[in-house]
Image 1 (cartoon, rainbow, N blue to C red):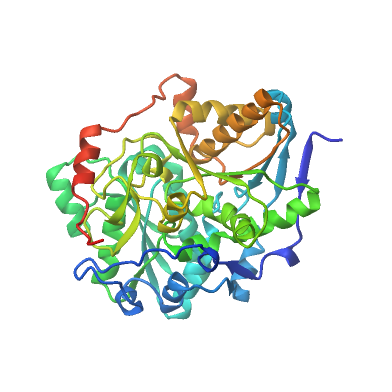
Image 2: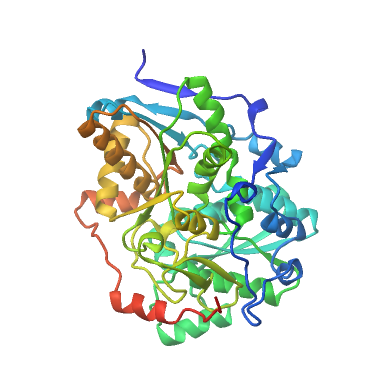
Length: 454
């Protein structure tokens, strides 16, 4: 048998529906609250930011939501994505475990993010919207929305976190190639950005700050809507095409995963792979382990507080209950820029509280160790974010080796690292350091959480 084992579906097997985990939750999600009244928000409260179709998906409790054919038509550009068996990595580790990965780096933007960028752009176009504002960390989301905007004739403005804007110029070039305007955040283009720069001119930025700028631009301009790449329910919903495909591919392989792993910053990449499998379990199927892997320098699940908080630094967004490090927390400038968010998706946070998923945190050097080992075995260079999932998969395989267990491990290889080679250069030059957050700053950020009655 060849060392390379790939399970590929044809385009007729692209899912026709998104899967909504909300329908199968044993306990419903806490409501989203208005920041002023602290009362649950209604669809009208969100209309300045999102088209109504996405708002209805955000609050939906229906198990399946049909994917419009124009969206499936674009999905055919790269979906279904392959499920791969990492036999060479298994051999290198000497493990009895079977390691599989779902490879989302085959999309035009090189990551899983177009799974939601395309629907978001299409629904905005259907409502007559011609301009979108958004934020991005490492640039995977910004480049994906830029790609979707180009397809549907929508102008896209991207506020990119300053540290990533400087670290990853090729991501910025990709966004501009697709026609988007990319601005380093915090910027002088918004009130929230100017206020932060007045206090700290060399501020490295954060996703919370970039969200504030993008939301402000949409709120102040009636012809602009806001688009988000993770965290919200409708974003996680769109990503479930990935896990649904994986279920079919494991049927082809005659196998079934015992452990499912994904890196987590806002939660969409983990949710896209895990939620369809978790739905099977909640509807009476067999139990599995689900592991969310986050950076030790921004550990919202493992170190954050489960509380109501703002999604942005300037407090322009509604309040959501999530695992949070505090909306004013600014993480160190580590290379996995897509994981530098102060909060975790409410749905993922809720699952963690219910004990349905696990969470682990790793420092970046250990993740790059695993990423390089994976690249040398399997030939794909993972994005810095995805190296977190690789690290966890390797550790789980080594656990199986120690215990003599032949478990099946699945992880989401959420994107390639072709635009992140500066990080790998730093790694090989010995300049990549494990950065730690400031405990005092974290304590201050958590002390400033909004007061919400139980």
